[in-house]
Amino acid sequence: MLELISCLVEHNEDKNYVIRWRSATPGQKVTIYMSDDPEHFYSGRPPGLPVAETNDEVVLVENPDKATRHYFLLAFENGSHFVSAERRLTLQGAPNFRDLGGYQAHGGRHLKWGRIYRSSKLSVLSATDIDYVRRLGIKLICDFRQAVEQELEPTQLGDDSDLMIANLPISPGSSQSFMAGLYNGVIDVQDSAAFMETMNRELVATQMPRYASMFEYLLTHDQRLLLHCASGKDRTGFGAALILDVLGVEEDDIVTDYLLTNACLPLDEELERLSSQVTDASGSALGHDILRPMLEVRPEYILACFKEIRERYTSKQAFYQAALGLNEAKIALLRDHYLH
Image (cartoon, rainbow, N blue to C red; front, side, top):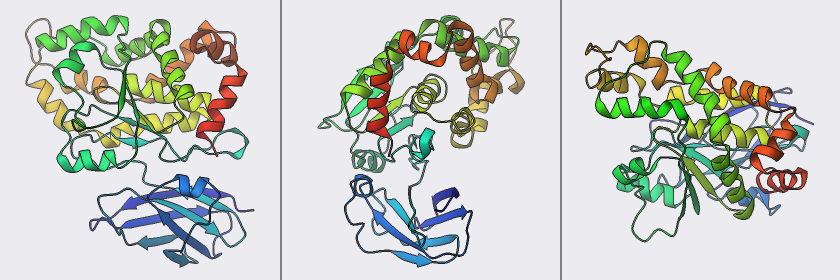
């Protein structure tokens, strides 16, 4: 059977799809199928008519509806198949909107596409964005922002949206003073990278009940859901990492997903904006060397979370049970829901 090394779906300037892959046995014929519903490929139903066939490892597929997201089934000549889609959804008002699908878990299973999304705030979506997101079929949103953030920048997905929003405010200890300083235009942090590691460790130390609630929603709502905070990088980043970890994704792939935020967020623009608005405690303008570690993600940030877990719990299984309320039966149910 084919060992698929990698697969990447992107769109070009004309909004058509470019699909690239690498396999252990290149040169065999690959038949491509497309659907606007990922469940079509997970249900066992016939895939329909192919949109392309090739012996190469790249193909251009015309996009029949640019207002709709599409998913692809790659059927290889030797009988193996693989489902893929764009990981990052290009939205004007939410640049860090991503799908957690496709990652390989233990036992050769993969996360289903179109089931779990992660994002930044949804308060400035364009009309086109709103229409696109609503077509994804998301029914549940886990919002990790604090009450003041939700009040100042409420989620905007249309007045007639039937979405359920679960408010799960995350407030790690030392970040409270940082956030207060940020709102007041003053930041007093000397080693901002170390500060970010500390803040991430505090997610494990103080915020696990919120993440445990997230898993309760995952268990009781077998449907498409989105988790988000303000920028979609710290609180959401750890939430997504926990989901991938519980579902059996390797730590290296979890870090890879975490780091994609750096390619999605307009870091340089945000650096310029903040550097003109905030100072240090002495009133001096903050340098980019202080601000950049707070605005980007680094491997050591998410690894600090896993280090804190290992220091506090005797095993991953003990952590799942004690901190997240997940026994073996619940973990098996989650994997049945979200893996194929």
